[in-house]
Length: 463
Image (cartoon, rainbow, N blue to C red):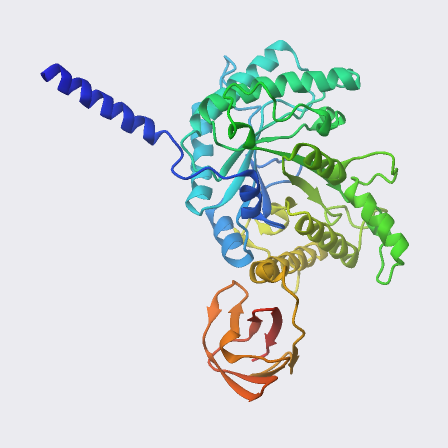
């Protein structure tokens, strides 16, 4: 009897321990995961900071606080550079994993969705059997380490090396298929419902990923749901398309050519499919959604070079790219965090009398992405409806505005600040069936949004 009692206790303990090792939340479908971040929501951290490429932003929870609170940022690409984090036996250092775990927990506590992109090898590392084994062992260790983390975490093994540069297209594709298959088996043993993201980088990118075998029919955990937890990602490139030629009022024929270049990773040849066009083709043929995990305009180029874009050209490029992601219901990692974060003062870049053109550009990008974020946040449920035309004046205003539109109703009017918070410090006076007057009290100057069932209107309070 006593033995039976002990066995029961042991079973309950093991069961509790097993439960503790499972993610605490329900699985996310790939599209739910992508929707959680949306356009403009991706901010890239390199851990550790990459001194050689000037991506020097030391991780700080204040960055997350600022981006999430002020700019609707709800996720990011966390690029973990692991090639120097091995011991003499080729095993990942546990201390390095522990430090990474603290950062990921910080994201998860804020309910932010991220993709952990793990770079195991140097770019020029040859794909020897030894390096292949090293990569698999490290991936197995990480797959086990994070199996109990929220489903907000997706994981991506980065293949960024030139070890296959001498292979032809077919051999490169077959090698990628074999490696991704092995990594998938390892991952699914510990993470049957976590999203795995695929991304061939470097020379491996030359094998069009829509020709690969994702999500692999020989998944080790077969079932109608298991093959569903996959996404793919693609890289854009720095300054896709000839946006240095863009100007306001550009003829539509030239704009169309420019838009095609941007969608095709800068390639004008209509017989070739690259970049976002290739990702759309892949999604249409497989049903697996994708996200863009790296794109950027030309603001980072050295001033005065032939490829340097003006501020207007940069902003036009960003707006087109982000609107395209919104149109195709995808997400996009974009502007490097370092562009907006002053690592010396540990704060967002602020304009002052000594601000450089790069700082001004950074703030302009933040304003653009912030406004697009708010527009989407407030207007998503309006996209399927007819937009009601409403006239508002004066705008900007000091203490009151007048709205004119067809059959306006006081009870349907709501007002939000730039963070999406509903405000109540106003009164509405009905002038007639089509006219309302809104009076504001004790509200600081700034940008606000007036909303009814079929419209979202930006208004600016001056005092």
